[in-house]
Length: 420
Image (cartoon, rainbow, N blue to C red; front, side, top):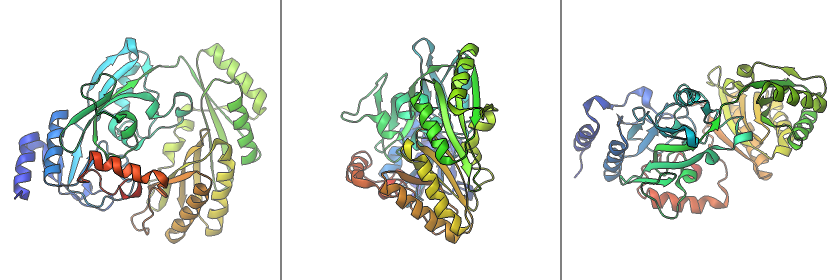
């Protein structure tokens, strides 16, 4: 029989006493308290820890920079926090090939600073880059405004290595060590919230750093007019990098566009933009404008619900109208930032009893038009909202893949779609 003391002894022997400790209250995940925290130093140590936990059927919660632990549903159980904080190396920057291999615990900021020395970047603008890790960004599929030009994380990642619950280190994509036949691991694990395996390293395609950047904001008389302007920009020959709408329940809104390139090119793009949107355009601070999505998390959302919404690019205005129609009678304040792709972040705050039915109604209307709403944060005192909404017809396939890779259901149990 495997006892708690036996498990502790095995885990200590794998990572060393210094990197094994009892979990504290601050390690709780959405109110669920784990027992231990383990910090392996290598892929092999992480795989060995995972194998040990799997043998004892101990639930494992992967943790990087701990910036997005409120995303998803609360875990059904939590025995072990498996931290990637020590797997933080940039293993290879093949700058001539525009690729980089990096461990999962490396922060986005540390990676970008390294790449910038060679005039390159990972075209990813995730939240809290100074703390958020590569593994966490991939697991939550977190990307920002640059997605419009460079694609989502699934378009940037070309290879990945993950640790499976049985201790196998499986790789897929670029620079393959061992393949898992039939699975595209880079795409499968991106956005899976660590429920299929723990990412230990990833290989990305890179892009040259821009020579210059120019951010321009413009106004309109209504959200509907702004929608028309955005669609006109998207249909034009403008070579913009990012485009977004931001606003609130008071009816204040603006649109922002980012151009990158040479000074001559930037001037030409700005001139074309003015012809499309008129004289309301003005240059803005890039830091102020493109940090708007992260600003929705400040002040800390103690009494707010924060959600990710996805709609058709042509339905952005309709979506904002729906939010306002549902929120106003309940005296709820809301703010939003929506990219031209139709993917956005919504913050709703006010009376907790009014927040839940409002979010549920917004979700229902979005789902009826083949859109979606995912709850990223909800107050602990609020009657729980399901984070994901309707899983659709894919849920049986998703459960089958989960069972194939994690048959004992030890990885983030219950946190993903449909209680996976």
